[in-house]
Each structure stands twice: as structure tokens, then as C-alpha cells.
Image: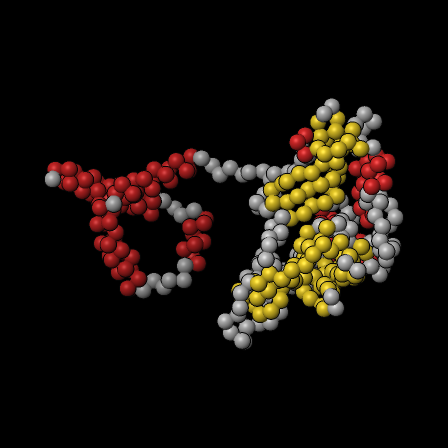
Length: 166
Length: 194
């Protein structure tokens, strides 16, 4: 499995890449799941979500994706009456935002290791704590800074025969 | 000393069997996988490649078989036994609530009152289970008139071995938990102290 494009999180005024998918839990718990189109090996879930912690609460603020019929998916595709933000009350777990230089790249899921992980503990959408986990120090000053992926394969949509699209 | 001769004698006999089996196997037409593998083999068919494969390798391998024939016999027997036991596909474990997980019996009204979500920014419907209200209604439709509604708490390990805490509500009929509705699914993997 290819390394995956991260979600985006705004936490304490900083925008970070987040290697956790809270919306996945929503779908697992019975929430409406649109038929996202898979067109890139680095985005198996078919969407990218923007998240924000406001007053110690986790909100989804945007969603970008493409549906199987080729139309664009937005936050209102999943949450029709909430175009601006959605309180993620269904989510309990730990958000992970890698920070610092790359220590070890793994071309699989969110498997790469960085110098630090910002961990934000959430219970039913409410932040109950946050911490930094130290994973080590990069040997080289030239090591890549910040989360990223190295390669992916994209699939073009078949405009003539959209029913054949993956 | 005679035992040593006997040991090496069996080793030579084993070598003969191994060579014969190899010759017989090469006389069989290759299966699709072997043919594909051979055609994809990047090693060029050079003189030295032939020398290595046809001369050097057998010369080096023969004494090894004579000396370590018990290992060769063990490997062959294991191989034969393994071939008779086809690979068993384990079905994926599905989570189900058990009696030991039950916490508290509640009425539908109590549950819905308890689970109505409030948010200062108004980013959730003022309904039981908020954004999961439709899923809750679907669950309620399945509850029989005589079923009891219980809260549950369970520790669960996924197929991949990741521990999780699962909470929610379950319909119980004749003391047997049936369909459930999850309210919390929390991975315990990340809950490690710094």
C-alpha cells in the first residue's frame, strides 16, 4: 500500500499534516458514506478532510474529494446541513501529527517515522490532552522536514466510458 | 566406527534419492508459475552460469547432503505433510457484544436523553446521537417489542491484533445480546505514555 496523503489539522494556530482519519470512524459507526472515487494510490479513502480544534473541540471544516459519478464531494455531501463546520462527536482516539525531520520513510499508509509526533487525545470529539512523543533525532541536517509522500500512481477518469472508471 | 559408516552410507543413499527426484522433476512439463518464473529470470545463459549451476553447485551440495541428511529428510517430510494440509483461510473475526460486556439496562427515552449532543458552535443536530441520528433510528427499528436495551463496554482485538475499547448500546432478547449500536470505538494503541 502506498504512503497516504494526510488530512489537515489546525491546532493551536498551526496547520499540520494529520495522519489520522476521524471521518473513517464516522463511516464505521453507521454514518452516511458517499461513494468516493479512488483515482490515486496515495489516497485510498478518496477524500481529504480539513479539521480544526476550537475551544478544545474537534471540528471538520472542509472536505475535498470526487464521487464515483465524477462530481466533486464537499463537506455537505456527507453532512448536508452543516456547510461550515461539523462537530466530530463520534470520534474518540488520538490524532497524530508528525513533526520535525524524517527519520525513516515507509511507503505504506502512514508508516513513516519523524522526529516527533504531536498526539492529541480526543474523547467523543473533546480534547482531553495533548503530548509530544519523541522518536529520535535525524542524523543529517539535510533530512526532509515535515510529512510528505514520495510517489503515487494516478488514474485518469475515462470520460468516454465513465462506467469503466475505477 | 561402523555407525559412522552407516551414517554416511545413509547420507549417500539420500543423495542418490535427491538427485533422482530432481531429474524426474525436470522431466515433467513445467506448471504455469514455473514457466513464468523461468522466462522472467534475468540471469543470462552464459558459460560460467552453466558451470556454476551444473558443476560447482552439485559438487558443493553433495557433501552437504551426505553430512546433513537428517535435515534434508526432515525438510522433505515436513514438505509432504504440509502439502496434505491445505491452507486454511481464517474468516475475519466480527465484533459481537457478549453478556459479560453488559453494563446497565436503560429505556429508550433514557438513552436518547443521555445521548443528545450539545455544541456551543451549533455544529451538530440537537438530536440523539447528533450526526449519527439516522443510524440510531435504523438501529431502533430493529429492536423488538420485548427486547431490553442495555449499554455495553467491551475490549476488542481486531484481526490485525490492535486493541480497542468499544462502547454503545445493545438489544438483548431472552438474555442474549443481539444487534448493537456503537457510540465509541477507541484504539488503545496510541494510549502510551511519553
